[in-house]
Image (cartoon, rainbow, N blue to C red):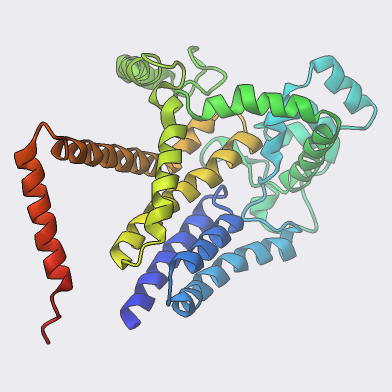
Length: 350
């Protein structure tokens, strides 16, 4: 039991650390995996609960700290603010200006998402705050790295207003939002991951110098993977078929009496859970860098693809062996099956 408890503790500790490092891996994600573990861990649910308690407390401590200190229940202060990229960002400029003038949207709706804190001075005034005494929250710039200070307290107010702007857009234009998701952000998620920056192809792009060295490799990779078949998705266009196959096959594995077979099904469904969580989060909540977020679940995608192809190869070999055109192979297979069955029926030696 101690060994199993240690394994579960290591598992949930890794999940908690990922949740602390990546805001996309929200507390909801941790909770979903916890309940999934309770479902598949027959006879070990007490150990699962004990093992998850400490890591969950660590993750909750960050959320409650932010709630008490900053007034939001999340892992970082930018959460929700980037929702304008998939909502108000797509408004016609005339309509956005009209809504800002009428007070339906904040004045920040007309500013870039990555606008530096100096852009907010006309709206928020004095950058020094009595409420936030830490110098990291009051300095407009970071001279040591020559960059704006995106930890300034201005962003607490700005992102709160941006979340309100996104909610107003969703209330007024829900169908336009769904069209943006279906025709824009969802395809972006499975498209080439290196063309997302709005200044791509110009000297102002942050990748300009990299492309001078590796541009030929980037173009060749994207052409082969994303534009040879089913552009711009490439083989990812077939992913729903693989997901359905693994979900169907994994369901029967999870119902097996064998711990080993059930563990295989649990691994498959764990991969499905990661994809089923992160793809909607990417598609519904952000815009532009979606393909980059796909890297978080890329290993699970290829796990599922590999498992499906391996099952297909095994099924094809079995069909070949059982074909009447190969009676000798059929005899060998039946003989091996008989040996296995005899061993399974043999009383255990103590």
